[in-house]
Image (cartoon, rainbow, N blue to C red; front, side):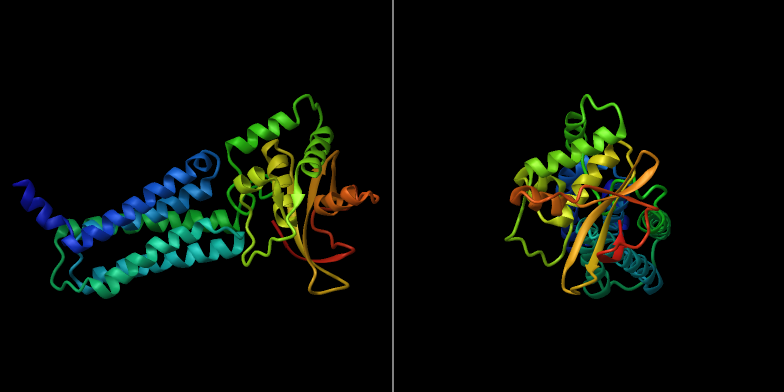
Length: 303
């Protein structure tokens, strides 16, 4: 069989191939940006694969209505999982998967109107791709809702890269205990970072590269940076969101960290501002557990 005939059977139209190469370029750029995170973030690898695999549908001539329905359904589930992950983890990166998948849904649902029977090779490829994507959706669900150790995990709300780990190693160099490491991270953030009073984010998310580059941020950034430092050293740490018990418009994010066999409250943002004004620091307050109520805030979410 000639190569030209083989491609005539398996490849999409020229218009479909244009979409395919655009999405390939999109995924390549996304991969270059995320390459440092892939090594230590299984969740990002999963969502990146969810962005890549559906793109392969573009190289197939999907003619029949049932096969097109299968493709649209699987693309719909990828989009839903991306949105749920972005909202649940306050991460924008899964939304990049949503963008590529939305383009594919528009193409197969509106632009591509081929009719007729699918070739056997096309059917097999669609079913294989569908199986792979279904498995990835299952794993992405587990990463979002059932992380094995959320207080140590990387790739959900608290996302960091290898450079962050190297900096954490440098900060706690010479520290022999978890207490010393936690204190070192606490002091480093207070001494090296400033509160960004001009920040008014529509959608809060933690960008470790931006935070460390600018050395500025808000409570959400400082708490997740502290959590990233601690978790990179296998020290259990959560970031907690809350609404003030006195003023419902006052929202805040702080940390709960585990060392010496006890969970502790620590509010780096508050101590950052108190250090600048010379006031007494909040410091570390012992807790009875990681999820006990807070005295000053109604806790809305613990990351």
